Image (cartoon, rainbow, N blue to C red; front, side, top):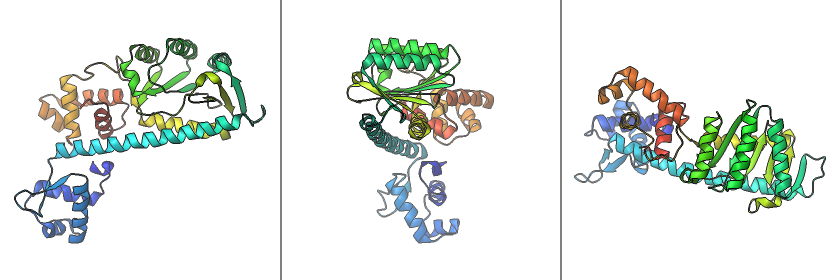
Length: 325
């Protein structure tokens, strides 16, 4: 389990030995694991850096393993901070990438896969055309936090048009929209219509990608009213599609009933997630919570679906990111 959090197998083995037998020294642990004392010391250095072990107050120079639940919370907090930093760096890179396109737009002819659209009206007309003609999917970055009433009306109109024909619609907004009633209302409406909405800590400039064939990006990310570039062609769109999918994978699902609810989990669900985060299986968690294994499995499957998680570990990580634990 801890390998997914950055520990190697031998690091985890040393940690487990220290938990099970606190009195063991470096030599004894090395003998049990059939490795060298120097390798164990290197593992201890790493575990100490990750705050999974700490120095004994009674015997300075001797290390003690931190209780698993506390240790996991520390690792999750560390990974969360690293994830936020990676998202920020990725957003900065994406913004630079899109500004490069915008700067090049004035120099590319209409036959070069880049068309310049001047002003809001021209952009809205093209969005209407794209929503009308979409056959497969519409992917959108929605930066800027709370959206204006006009922008939300336009989004509902365009997305509703596409969704009505069975086109998949996925939107990524900033986490701050969870606290804005109007934007959150749009997000709830979208999910009710079988679209998908996720949030993340940072985003590149606004972008709309349709059917993997056309993309709109702003001429000026700081002033979207100036207009947009309409991009087409695999060479231009492939990196934008890849950036969207990378951001989507790191984003948090909206959840049932809309995010922003004061308490998205029942007491039973929170207790089950806490047990899973501590390393329990569904069966051992069921014993801890005095429910049947079937109930624990069913509840965990529902939580994983709500969180968009593909494993129990990922569910624990995403729940911690959302502040559910």
